[in-house]
Amino acid sequence: MTTYAIGRNMFDLDTPVLCLDAAKLERNIARMAAFFEGRPARLRPHSKTHKCPTIAWMQMRAGAIGITCAKLGEAEVRAQAGLRDLLIGNPSLGADKIARLINLAAYSEVMVAVDDAANAQELSDAANAKGIALRTIIEVDVGMGRCGTLPGEETLRLAGKMVALPGLRFEGIMGYEGHTVMAPDMDKRRAAAEAAMAQLVATHDLLVQQGIRCDIVSAGGTGTYHITGAYPGITEVEAGSYATMDAKYHSVGSDFELALTLLARVISVRGDRAIINAGMKAMTHEFGMPTVLHPEGWALAKLSEEHGILERQGGAPLQRGDVVELLPSHGCTTINLHDSYHVTRNDVVEAVWPIAARGCIR
Ligand SMILES: Cc1ncc(COP(=O)(O)O)c(C=O)c1O
Image (cartoon, rainbow, N blue to C red; front, side, top):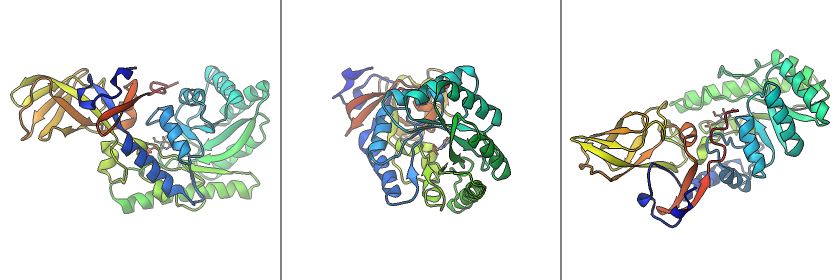
């Protein structure tokens, strides 16, 4: 970790370097927390975007009830940082993962998503052998077409099996409406998200009618927190990108500020092209090319492994050594490429925070 950077101006740092504006991050966390104040639904922010225990702690101090994690490995990192009430939003399968999960559950507060009866049985057997009751939640597919049981009867059948398993404690259901969160038209986004939540809440009601206790109904992302978080019957929201934000979410309309930038340097100039020292190993482009914030009048045309090709679009000529500030198009995957955030206030580095859960794909 390059803590020598503390106190330096961010534009003097060695590059490529991932920077996080502390004031914007704080305002994003406060804005989201304010939305949930006094509402029945609470916030369990997804940490798959920032991957950083310090940010998770900031979210907890702002009122979050726990932290959502994508993978078991992410939850292990959170637990090591003393974070509590961790929801692992993907199923954990196979002997290796189940052994890790059960050990994690024995020593910290963790809850895991399940969408299959055989997996539920394996988890129950392992938890039983360890003498614990593993907290579980059913993942329901509310239209995204990823993991999850179908809403209604299929979820009821699995829940019925799970409540009978001695090693499990059944907590409820989750259904991320990921197919709706970036719909550019807000009316269409609202209609699609509400249709998804109607299925999820109806599934909750069906379980309860059949005598199955279902305390958690979890859903929601940065693009739908205000819809899902206000939908009657939703008990918690899993939004995550809002803390750091990225250009893609910003382009579809969002109240949250762009806290994350990447600094690179020009290493070669040829006419109206400038080559920077950051390519695909420093930023991702599945959501489109990152935006050049500074200097104006230049755009990123191409990325190779270690290089980015900038094209002049009316800006002043660039020189070798000039700093270029870029806005990542997709925060989650770009952050995953870096070891740490250089956290800045008024452009001065205030802290260097490890991105401790980067690469935790198992
Ligand atoms: C299960 C789950 N919940 C919630 C989210 C919300 O994330 P975001 O805030 O990026 O929309 C995601 C994002 O991929 C997710 O996979």
